[in-house]
Length: 361
Image (cartoon, rainbow, N blue to C red; front, side):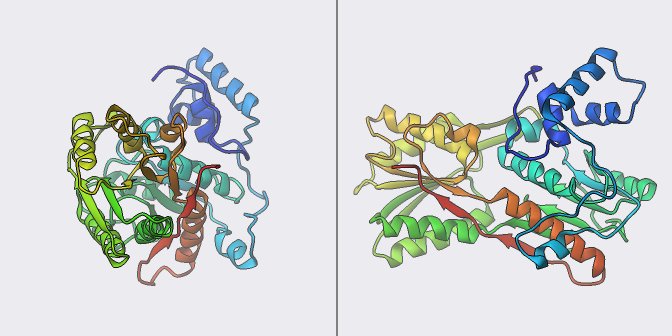
């Protein structure tokens, strides 16, 4: 990645992620500079420290105020109990660069999580895990106060999840039954989309999404809601719609072009399209315009996730369904605090409600 300076996603105290993005280095490099590691080039040290100064970054210390909240209950739940080990955030097999460059929604949640944890009395450590063996090794050596997994938990056999260390997975595919899980409420996401469309007079809609069991279930419910209102929903899906690897997260342009071509030929033509993720929305706009159809004027667009890098250049803006990254991060912190107090309780799955955002008139 080019060494470019990027502003933080949101206002508030600067985080380690912000410093890494601003300096154009990896999170491990920032960590080594913070710990005065000898194996860092002087010019890199200067670059990282300049980024810290520019962002006003302050390393978390013990004794800082606990997390502020709009309710006493949330404040009590989200305040971690005193522990000697760090709070660890596991970044998955692709690491921080992939999250920052290619997965905006995960980047937003990570930023919010860091901001919340910086206000606690625990040190924060970001680590890339490739398998459960690495998780166990860290748990044995550092005795962390807790571990959050951003996205999917590590691959491989999960029967050796470390005991005595509370773990929470944030988003990602359905996890092991041995780990608490916090995720967007995708059923409510699709219900919210259906209710907005029905409320604005749309009865014939198309859905463009990846293929997969979880999406099959929620889009089936979406179709049922549309049919109950006297309308119809046509789903277009393909397992190769989005390609993900260590060096890419991109759409399959040919598949999207084929889908849009089929949509505009439907009789009657749908009056709205639901894009199952924002990365699909710009090419949908492009293909509609190739057919002489104006997005948001001739056909309504509802886009899920509300990821600014994908939506900022679109004009007019689509209807966005925001997954509420701050609420997801806060719920994860509260869940981990609860898990430390109730280590023997059954694992839970907490779902966070979305918010629909209409563009300005």
